[in-house]
Image (tube, rainbow, N blue to C red; front, side, top):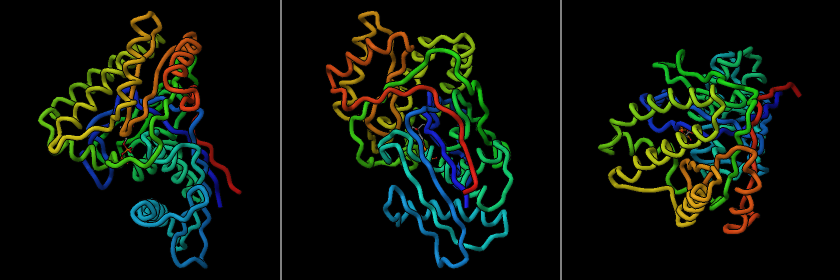
Amino acid sequence: MATAKAHTNIALVKYWGKKDQELIIPQTDSLSLTLDEFYTTTTVDFDQELASDQVMINGQQLGGPAARKVTRLLDIVRQRSDLTARARVDSHNHVPTAAGLASSASAFAALAGAASQAAGLQLDRRGLSRLARRGSGSATRSVYGGLVEWQAGNDDQTSYAVPIMEEVDFGIEMIAILIDTRQKKISSRFGMQQSVATSPYYRLWPEVVAHDMVAVKKAIAARDVDQIGAIAEENALRMHALTLSAAPGFTYFDSDTLKAMAIVRELRANGINCYFTMDAGPNVKVIYDRVNREAVYSSLADQLGADRLVVAKPGPGIKIWND
Ligand code: DP6
C-alpha cells in the first residue's frame, strides 16, 4: 500500500494534439508551471481478495469510462510487476474536477506514483513521468515541481518530462479564476482529436509551438515574467483558435471567460502587467509577477468576486510514501 501526492500544472506552451492516441505521444513539446494550491492525494492498495478495481474519488465510487482509464493504468503497472491482484484506489482531489484546472494532471501523476510504489516497481522520475503519461498527457509534467518541459519524443521510451527550474527563484504566480467548476462538456481528449483531424490551421501549430518553446525558455532564463506571460497568452489564444476552426467548431470559453480576458487587458492598459491563459475549460489563469499581486487581485475581486479567486504559487514535484 502506498500514497502519492502530486500537484497540477498549467501549461504556458500548450499540448494540443497527439500523434499516438494509445501511448499518448504528443504532436509537440509543451512547458508548464506546477502550482502549489491544487493537488491530488491517492492511495493504492493491491488486494488479492478484490474481484475488480475499486476507485473512490473524494469519497464517491467512480464508474464508467473514468474508472476504466484508472484500470488501464493499473493494468500497465500489474503487467510490469507480474501482479494479478486488483486494487483499492482512494483519491482526494484538491482541485475542482474536470473544470479545466488540470485535475487529470495531478490525478494521473499521483495514481502512477502510488500504484508503481505499491506494486514494488522502483521507478525513477523519468519512469514515473512516462507512466503518468499513459493516464493523461498533462500528467507527464506533474511529476516535477516548478517549470517543466514535456519533450514530445516519438515513442514510449522517448516521451517524458524534464525539469527546467524545479525551485522557481523569481516572482511568477497565477491567480486561478473559477468561472465554472462543473464538468466540461467537451473533454480535452476529444477536443484535441477534433482539432488535429479537422482544423485547417492545425498544420501550423507545430511551428507555433517550436517558436514559443525557444522563446519561453529564453524568457525563463532571463526570469522575465512579462515576456513569459506574453508568450503564454498568445500561445493560449492560438490553441483556442484550433477549437474555433475545427469542424464542427467549438469553444471552451463562456461569457465570463471573455470578461476576465477583458479585465486582464484593461489592467495591462493601466500599467499593471498581467496575462491570461485558459485550458480546455472556461476558467482563466492570470499570470503576473508577485509585486503586482495586490493590484491584480483587488481588481479581479472587485469585478468578479473574491470567492472565485485562488492565488497559486509555484508548487513542488511528486511525493510518494509507503503506508
Ligand atoms: C489544454 O492532458 O487533459 O490542458 O492526454 O487526452 O488526457 P489527455 O489530455 P490532457 O490535455 C491537456 C490539454 C491542455 C494543455 C496542456 O495542459 O498542455
